[in-house]
Image 1 (cartoon, rainbow, N blue to C red):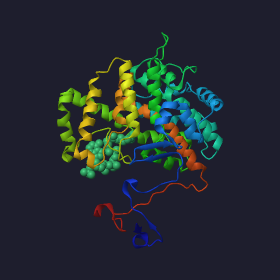
Image 2: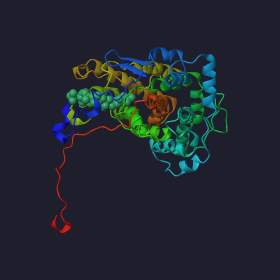
Image 3: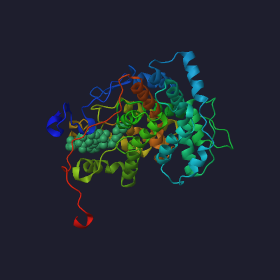
Image 4: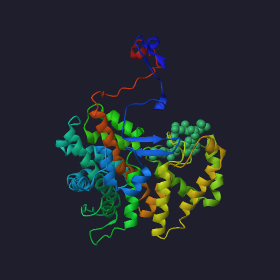
Length: 405
Ligand code: ACO
């Protein structure tokens, strides 16, 4: 705690807390994490129970409105979401402005922000009805946006949403279907996709959620605030970790594979190497991330369904985990697998390209961002976010004429 009177002659105190390691930026009743126990609750419900008993849209309803829906509420909500799955045809012109080899996150950052140019009836962040319609639109359109970003990149025709399918089934069809033949949704892959969405739906005040809150606190429109979250999620220390993790596994595989796992771990422990074990460690979890356990289970199911039980990357990941769990470096620092450690292997098996992993995370996390944004704006005490700084630059000095500098 710093006495700012000594610094600036102002009254009061503030805390200097780089990276906000011990600063609560808000009160929230949405998601609870006990990092020591490895516990994650959405609105009080353990993630393990939600992952087994609910589908993603039920979880969306829970995060947005505070309670799980009954059958009637669920049907009405599903119906509302599916009636907004199309994107405006004009969006295609926007999409065509991108290079084909653009990273999907670059495209998504643009497209999500661009939604605010299309829906003038849902851009007033202070109007609860506008926020609610924006929430439904974002949840409904994100799978379509992710799928068109993918299809654009490979030069394939877009698939329009098919609303008699489940949320996850529709996404799989838009990704992997083509207009010339019927697409049959594989129920194991559909369930796996849905589980990936559930496990990524919210995670309290992480970097991207805090970004959405800070951005939204200026009164900008909900689509712009969510686009800020997309940009933040892209980074390899956050949502980009699953992509970085799979790249790491592929790199080890290409350089000797499982036999070289021990050698790689030595590099990870060498601080001068700059190498991290991606998919390991977490700011809040100092125990096994409960989502990683569920993801490992899903990984087993998907690989068995696709006849890929002997997938060398899965074996390699399990070996790296085994080494880490028995190694003092990791034990002392309480570094355990996070959700990203196994999610990349599942997504790769489903056929999702590595550079789209963070896009899938974006799709799933959108509901969490909106729920958090709603919670902030609904609080009568909310204020524009404005962190302070400890100024370390020059004292006042005079500008010299250019010929005397
Ligand atoms: N590999 C090797 N060492 C690690 C790792 C890792 N993955 N993670 C942390 N450490 C070490 C640090 O070097 C540090 O060591 P030191 O005490 O000797 O200096 C110690 O463990 C503490 O780590 P911090 O970086 O201080 O922890 P922080 O809470 O700031 O960072 C983070 C958490 C960013 C997630 C980090 O663990 C990391 O970079 N992990 C790899 C990337 C990753 O998987 N990110 C996904 C996070 S989950 C998500 O966004 C869905």
